[in-house]
Length: 164
Image (cartoon, rainbow, N blue to C red; front, side, top):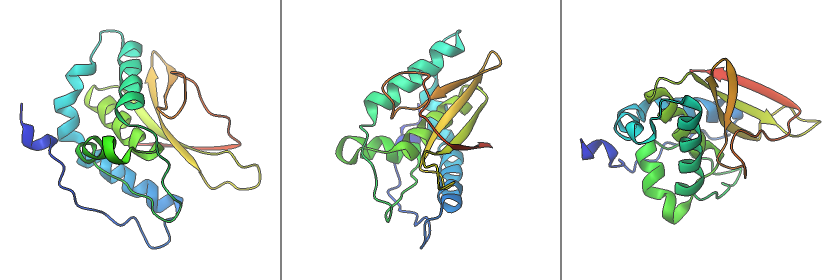
């Protein structure tokens, strides 16, 4: 196993000065792509012939390995998988970090997936939550480590799906 790929580089990427949903999403997509080598190393740990069980193992990992800690609206970060795991104990992570983790692992395990952004505000279409949707046996399976239960989805008024 190539341990060097699991070591974070500890570089900070400024999302943007204004940190719009589109810019944050772009940074998340970049982090998912840069996380591929590390995800390839970790992915076999989660493999199960039953892809739904694999998705649940990924959800359990996100839930337990990355303590939820909401970031302020002024300081949004997108990190690679090694950085998320290195920072998790001390800093926790939020829905973006859990999404990067779940998406990276699903992609490494060849499970089709997409990012879902939602707005829970009736009067504002701007997304305020993000998570991974895996496609298993033709059905959407929600991998959202922020929520209490596996394959449950938060209430929303607007949703946007992004395939990578």
